[in-house]
Amino acid sequence: MCHRPDPADRFPVDWLRLSEHRYLVSVDWPAAHRFFAPLPGGRQDPMLVAETTRQATMMLAHAEYGVPVGDQFLMQELGYRLLTDEFTVLAASGPIDVVVECSDVQLRAGRLVGMRVDLRFQRLGRVLATSMGVLYCTSARVYRRLRGVSMGAAGRSVPLLPAVPAHETGRTDPADVVLARSKHRPGWRLRVNVAHPTLFARPNDHVPGMVLLEAARQAATALTPGHDFHPASMRVAFHKYCELADPCWILAGHETDRELGAVVRVRGLQREEPVFTATLSAAVRDDG
Image 1 (cartoon, rainbow, N blue to C red):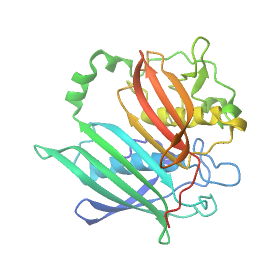
Image 2 (cartoon, rainbow, N blue to C red; image 1 turned 120 degrees about the horizontal axis):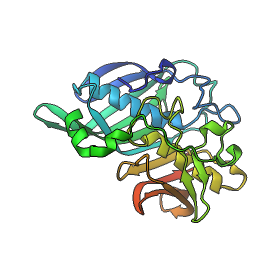
Image 3 (tube, rainbow, N blue to C red; image 1 turned 135 degrees about the horizontal axis):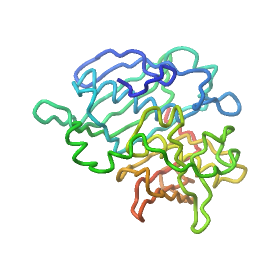
């Protein structure tokens, strides 16, 4: 139900309904993972919050709202924020409790078509992080009609571009790099590796959203002097499907946000149209 065929990539392990549209999800984050590996200093990868948000939302959509397994999901928005510096692997041993609040629940003929989720990640009563998402669902039949000939891209090979040096993106394994050099324009070109066991866990007719989140993280890291950037918060809006066959250009720049202070804004463009926009900050905001 988490849309992850490999058990090593599934983080929600159980759930309990607390009240209408409110749930408690138990999460087990690994101390080691092939992709969401610990960061320097023993810190847990904050992108686990984003991936867990995605998985928990889809799990509840199937289990509690009756969405058929064959239906398709579109995450229109996804964001998270760390609330403590103690986001460490050592502290992460054992399950984490996640309170999920579903709102703006939209039903059509008894079927879920969309909702907003707000999540609170906590251990022993202390809140570690919060996240949110806006999700839409569509039947397999409608999805096939919507995607048309693009459905044929699933399972096809995609040319694998040369990777940016891994250390520039905060990665150690070149196979995990999702950025390639851009020779003729600013920024980078999205590097699509359809054989990646985590980012492309199953055949897909478009670039998965987690690849775009990772592209935003890597672009912010590559832009930062010393390549020492770890996103304590991220907010992403997905504007359209990112097609496998077309180049996707990644642009990033430093800006100042009224609420967050210094941030990195990242955009993905395909055929000169925005695919996603992201705002990332390295600052941990403890709201007490």
